[in-house]
Length: 359
Image (cartoon, rainbow, N blue to C red; front, top):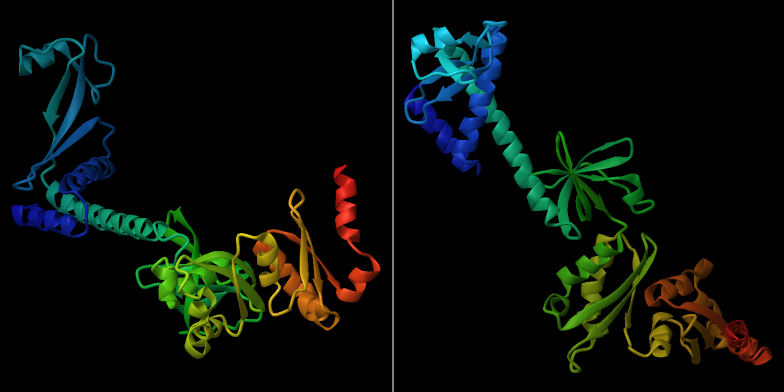
C-alpha cells in the first residue's frame, strides 16, 4: 500500500467519524489474520503498518528458551544471542517474515476492514441518534408489510410498527406517510432496531406539542393522557398563564388544531378537559361532555361518587362504559356514577360502604 492509499483511508475515516488510529489498529489486526490464513502459519506474529508510507512488515515473535520444543514459537538462547548479544532467557525476539506478495493481500484486507468499520460506525451513529429520541415522534414512509409488521423508512434507518402497536382497523399502504412514537431502540448485529407505536399515549402528547405552540412554549401543560386507540382519547390541560384558556389553545381557531390531530389518528375522537388541583372539579371535568351535579370523594381509597342528571347518565358512562373508563384513567380515581333518581333512592350508599370498610 502506498502513501496515497493511506491518506485516502485516513480522510475517509475522518469523514465517517472514525479516529484514524482506530482504523489503522483494526487494519493491523486484520492483516495478522490474513497472514495466518494465506500462509498457513501458526506463528505468533505482529504486523507493523507505517502510518505515513503505507509500508507493511510482518514479524514472527518468538520466546527465548533453553530448549526449543516448537521452532515456530520459540528460539534458543544461542540463536537469540547470535542476533543480538543482549537477549536473555524469556525475552521475545521479533524476526521479519514479510512475504514478497503480501502487499496485494494487505490492500484487499485493508479495504474490507475499512468498509466494515465504516458500516459499524454508521450503525453506531444511527443508534446514538435514535436512542436519544426515545419517547419522541418521528415521521416516516411505509415501505413494506411483512407478517402484519409494518416497516417504516425514517430516512437513515428503518422502524418496525408491530401489530400490537397498530391502531385497530387502521389500514397501512405502501408509501403512506405516518407519524409514530419511538418506544424503544435496540442494538442488534444487523444495526439498530427501532420499535415504534401508533397506540402509545405519548404519541397523542407529542402531536399536541407539535400542533399547539402554547404547549411547546410551556404556557400550557399537558397533565395527563388516556387513550383507547382508534376510538377515543381524553387529555387534561392546565395553563400557567391565567389569561390563556388551555382548552381553547388546544382546540384552536374553529377547532383546526385538534382536527389536525384527529385526522392524523384517522378519526380518533379527542376530549380536551381542564385539569384542576381539586379532585372533585377535575373528575367533573374529566366526565365531559356529560354535565355533573355533584362529586363526593374518598381521599384514602381514591374513590369518587358522581351524580349526574337522569338524562345524562348514559352520556356520562359512555358506550360500553368508555367515557367513565377514560375519565378514571385520566384522573387516577375510581369513579362510581349514579343518576339523580338513583342517588335519591340510596343516598351516600357508596361512600358509607367505603367508610365502613375503613373502620
